[in-house]
Length: 132
Image (cartoon, rainbow, N blue to C red; front, side, top):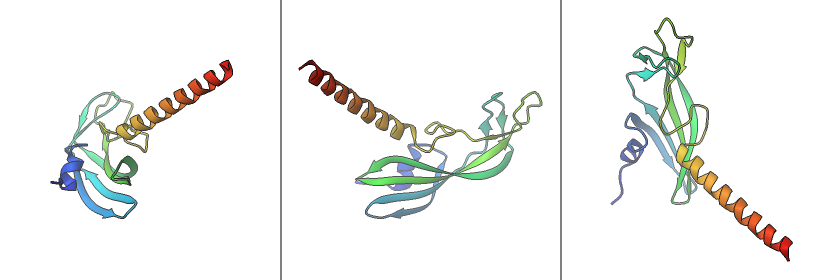
């Protein structure tokens, strides 16, 4: 039994809401929005309830059934109302995504594992061929 896509996305973040989805033989494309009523300032950790604006991030996630997964994530920018904080406006942070990257943590981890294992095997083969 397959899960509805909204339920699958909720495993990434409970505040994600699916707005649109498109599926082709090669791609899965989703537009999602983060529905949060507050956010924590990354500088002073003040909890802000005052949204500034919204912006869109393009993010890649792990492939599903040999299909590339691409997300457009609609996020908020927030005001920091702490008068002692040097940051006046900050972007919403997500636990499954670096604030400045375009790949989810889990996709980054898989890419690193593949890159490190490939490089180690190549280095090992190279080392053995030099000994002969």
